[in-house]
Length: 271
Image 1: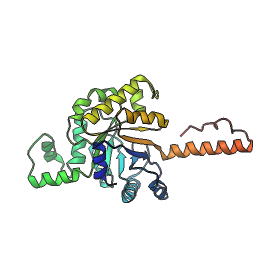
Image 2: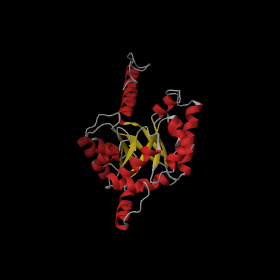
Image 3: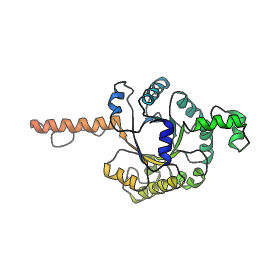
Image 4: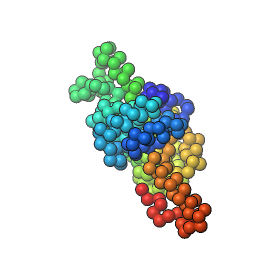
């Protein structure tokens, strides 16, 4: 899948599936290739990846048909351009709450390579030279702009945020959103479910993608899809490794009659 195909899928009806990739090992490409993913999610907000590592990962995953979507460290247009320069198919901007933030990101992602006063004028609605307009529009189809919805103020500002042109998707950050709602990590709480449903419904009504990064049980992830999400980032390589290693060791101990076969090992859920 190319970045433009992923963008079309986000704006359509068919769901797309990704996972968070933490490891920069080249061996990971062969593992991921056959897992049924549509894209990969690379997080530089919480994961320590330097710029050259990130660029290598972006170029490698794009080469095997998995568009790399990069979460940048902050809703900073300069961070967005660096990720795109490194080969990202698109960016996720964390903790966005205002139209001004979205507009600045729109300029960085969708109006490349224009900067400075000319970009300010374009974002304000000034008429653009036809050749430049065509050039920017052509590039905008190849780059995705997705914003994280992670707070009550963001949800309250959704209508205004969705009125900004060129957005490709909204992505819920469940840990931060649940905390901001006052129900930290209570992902089955009615307030959290209602907030997610509101984001999904409004994003899809606006014709853009609606997603969530979630690591819980498949049953709850299916509920997100049934409530309107069409972009699901399932778990992370490090969490899946931890989960299945713990289960395998527990099964081996149980089969061998060793202690630890009945209960999870101490700290087995620590990252």
